[in-house]
Picture 1 (tube, one colour):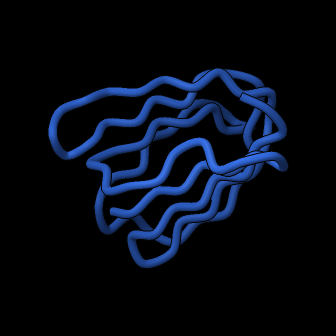
Picture 2 (cartoon, helix red, strand yellow; picture 1 turned 60 degrees about the vertical axis):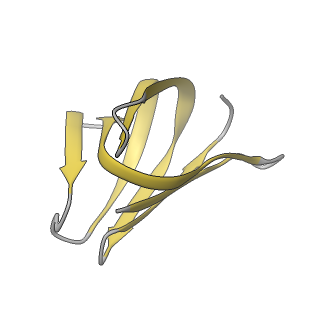
Length: 80
């Protein structure tokens, strides 16, 4: 899967990942390969990204929006 995390100022993360866990408005959820298309709002919390090489990144965000379509994930956040 391909992931981009973008703020109004800059692109925070870009690359191939195995999974993404986000703080959804109705609770945290994880997106894996071939996940159904989704658009959701995000609450204040932590985004956890697991790269293909096994590296893990965490980003504290203050809210935003996530879109997943055909294994391309775009996360727009207010701040990181």
